[in-house]
Structure formats: structure tokens, C-alpha cells
Image 1 (cartoon, rainbow, N blue to C red):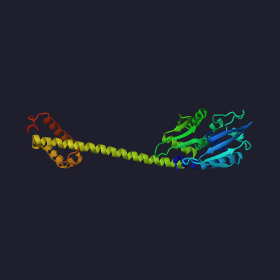
Image 2: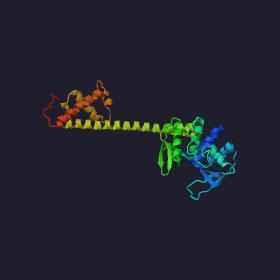
Image 3: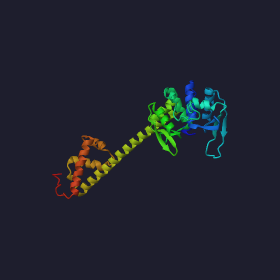
Image 4: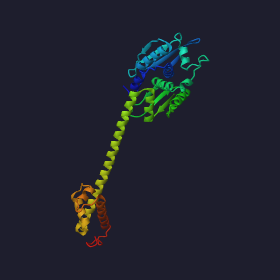
Length: 324
């Protein structure tokens, strides 16, 4: 079961104690997944479809609570095995489909069969109704990506005016949702993990929120470990390369003028470097008598490197025992 379906199943169990919030949620579900069927003179039916049985049961309960409508849930089996069954709820004209559409703000109350594509103002005036409407919009036409892969939540609509209204509703709760056109649809989306967490919280998907936060923590820990490992690997490579270069310089001096041509302090560190190739500069310094720090060892090795460079440039004669 996908993360999106799990989240919807959690939200489908939420039933508000306030009629206005239930009306708001039902209004969004109808707007996102409802179809109006004209049945003749001033008659129409309302059909609501979903592929999620939990959402179908919730719509059934909301219709009963808000309008005392008892409808049936019909199951349409899809011939394509890859698709889920469809669950259809039909509110006929005799059941009061027109009254339902007017109360949820989809039909203009003052005109017959005029569709209102904006979210009703009363929803904007109440934060609880806002949250309920967003929850219904997610149940009716939303989806959320698996946080293991990416952070993305979206609401797919087929009307530009309504998509703008839904975006404004979401953003009125301090979000920064945007709209993108995908084929013939208008998609309102959020991509920032913090905003997605906040949205899940306000619509009541607390289990989904906890899962997302756990994934974020694991991802952050994994990224931190990778950064540390990469940093340590880079430092180790740098140390190994420096040691190889130092040993080559010492071997070059040994094969040309000999290590005895070096001053005592340089000759001492040169012998240690060759004998203990895998030790760090700090460890080499601790083996000297008296011990010296990492910077002191590095200073001496740099002097040896300078001598080797001079020898390679042909200034061999300038390095007798007294000068070196």
C-alpha cells in the first residue's frame, strides 16, 4: 500500500463534530471527484466516484450526517487488472442533489444550473472549515509522494479558476503552494518538507506526519554520516598522498647526496618517515626526542622537500654537507 493511500485511509476516519466543517470537507470532495448529470427540465443527479473504499464510506457518512441522505455505494469492477475498482455514490434529483450542490457552494443559489468555480467565502472565514476543505480536497483529488523518494504533495483539478481559489485557501494558512499546468489539469503543489509536514498536521494526518518526520531524521543522519565519511576519506587520501611525496623526496636525496648531507634534525625525521610510512605527522613528532608537534614535523618535511626540488633543478653542487 502506497504512502498516499495510507494517508488517505487515515484521513477518511476523521469525522468532525461540527456540521460546517463536515459540509466544507464534503464540498471539496464533491468538487474534486463529483460529476453533475443533467436529467431533464430542472433535474440533475450528482455522482461521486473514488477508488478508495474508505473514502466512499466517509462520503456516505457525511451525506447522512449533513443532509440525511441514504444512498448506496455501487462498485464498478475495472476490466484493467492494474486499476482499482471504482466506488460510486449517486444522489438523484429526488434525493435532493440540487440542494446539496447549492449548500456546498457549487451551484449558484440565485440561478439555476450556474456553476460557481470559486470556494465559498464562508470557508475562508473559519480556520477549521479551511482545514476541513483542504482535507476533503486531498481525499478527492490529492496525492503525496513516498518521503523515502522525494517530498511532494499535490491537488489535481480540472478548472483554472478553482485551482487559483484552492491555492489561495491553502496559502491563507501560511503556506507557499504553487500551480503548474499538467496536460489539461491544474496542479496545486508543495515541495518543501517542512510545509508538507505542517499541511499533514493541520488536516489531521498525524500518523503520516510521524512517518514523514522519521524518514527525514534517518535521511539527515545518513547524509551526515556520508559527509563525515567523505571528509575523512578526503583527508586520508590527502595524508597518504603527502606521505608518498615526502618519501619520494627523501629517497631522491638519499640517492643523490645521501641523507648524511642533511642537518641532524632533518636527517632524524627523514629516517622516521621512511621507516614508518603509515604514521601521521603527529605520531612521527611524538617519536622524536624531545617530541615536537605536528606543525614542527611538517616544517622539517617542507625543508626536505625544498632541498629535493633544488637538487632536481640541477643545483647539486650547492649542497655540500656544511650548507645542507
